[in-house]
Amino acid sequence: MTNQTIRVVAHFIALPNKVEQLKAVLLEFIDPTRQEAGAIKYELLQNQSDPTDFTFVEEWTCDQTLNTHLNSPHIQAGVAKLEGLVTAAPDVRRYHLLA
Image 1 (spheres, helix red, strand yellow):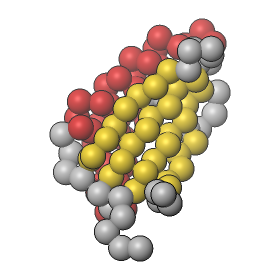
Image 2 (cartoon, one colour):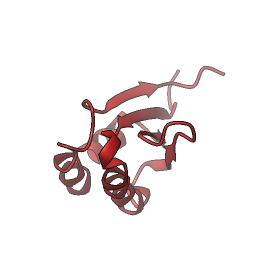
Image 3 (spheres, one colour):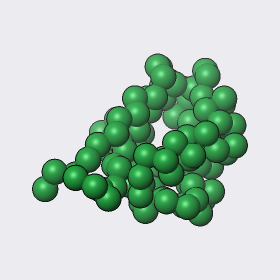
Image 4 (cartoon, one colour):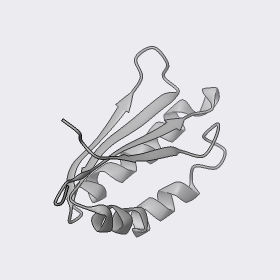
């Protein structure tokens, strides 16, 4: 399967008293990321029944554009702000669409 896009699901869990602070950090990722070459879709979701639960749903043209994104200055700066806001390191998974 060639020329297949990369789908990403990135999951963040805020500390209960840090929900709004984490939300603010994650929202800062959106505009610069949507301007990046290779970004097809970049959406931030918040769980309706558990407000500490945030998930990015992403689609990228290829692994190279995703890797460039992950190493971009705005992502690196945002990741540095996560300490003290989340219960654990983000759970970031890459997927290929099957059907």
